[in-house]
Image (cartoon, rainbow, N blue to C red; front, side):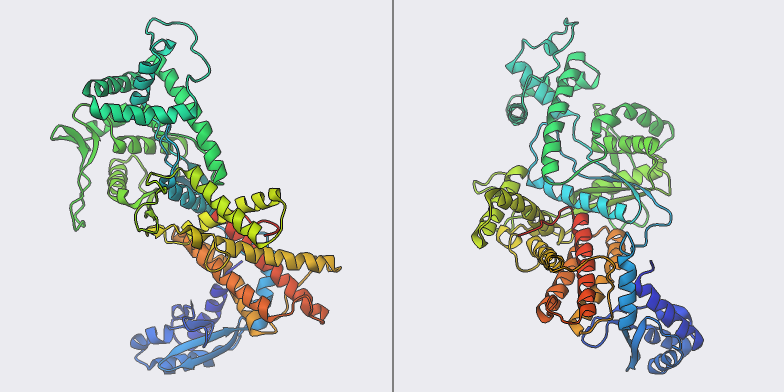
Length: 588
């Protein structure tokens, strides 16, 4: 389905053309004065200089030539030359009925679907997920869902931090604690144990202990570095320990991400790119892209248009060790070979922007990625506490993600049980669903690049611009629909009639913006646009609900129209919250 705004533009563009002006001046925008009109066109103002004519005269000419109005109801010229438009109520109702009959609610899906990889999550194995991992997971999951909704073929890749020095630290500490294990016996030729010699809890304690020791003990640090080198060179026992670390960690990560309603198609990590590094570095040297600078191997990425210095991308240290840039470039080699994507979107802290500029330029300059492949970095801000500093526990430590989720669910459980009598099992299930909306909406309603304050009291409120408020609106609609069917009403074959009142039309106008909002959210990688939209849609519904006797309406046809509009509103809201990564309960 074409978007409503496109349909209006076609009508107005034709009027510009008939009046002797270029039809491109018929561009429409949402009105910034909804008290005066619903849409507006400033084309007459833009065309005044080109046609050496007063804007008001151009606007009058256009309106006089608007001879075949279908979607436009009322139109007027306002000095000095604005064109104000209100839609035909019949056209709005007809459009919404077509939306209801379309499986995608009228979304224009991509004519040429793109193959897209979204790189998000990025946790390090052997470490617990904490609140610092929240934004990448939540924003990345939403971006992935939005792109899929628009018809693209999307793979979500967690890109694990599963290689390097941290692995050497864990192996060294494990060897110190349990030297008798077969993995550390170079003469051992039998089968290694299939079960890991540690639990996830023990593993999460081993790493920080080893890290602290290495900072204080140079000899310990050297042993860890040597263990890292041995692992990366294929040491048989260490490789099995590494697999144990991966198995235990990934199992725990999957559980935690599942609790967050985040899923990945690919569970690849830095280790998957290691085999591509030697050949890649050899080619970069041979082709003259990489050169030695102060002992390190680098690729120059400075461009003439740069207004400030962009340092070279370092791909090998003087001691031959690889860096993040090396792994990221090798990962691009692997992704091009295995998936040949049209676009790769990276989610990471906005403070890593320079790193990605260096990697992207290196990849393009050296031909690692095809010229037409789009590389995009979506940097996000920090999640802060009320003190404006990064979110911490009450004791001042970094809060584990599962603890944050548990705290939010507990807060929602209290609010649900305080408001009404409900069975404990139902209350806990509802608290889990509503708590997830509080966390995700609280994050996604902010523009990704901005820091924001994670305010538990505000985010869990059933009033205001919050996830629970959106869910409460959906549940209210469900309750009305249930009462309608309980009274003998049927939800099949209903049709939306032209609006009988202003609040009804306002709700309809919000509903028809759905596809336009999704297209913008995808184009700008901006889930917060969807949050802003459903908040406005929920407000429009609640105003309509308070001003209208829906179920008490005596005119049966009018009542059926109301119910049809409610069904569409519910479908739009539920589609949008699915794109944000949460769902609505049946009752609250």
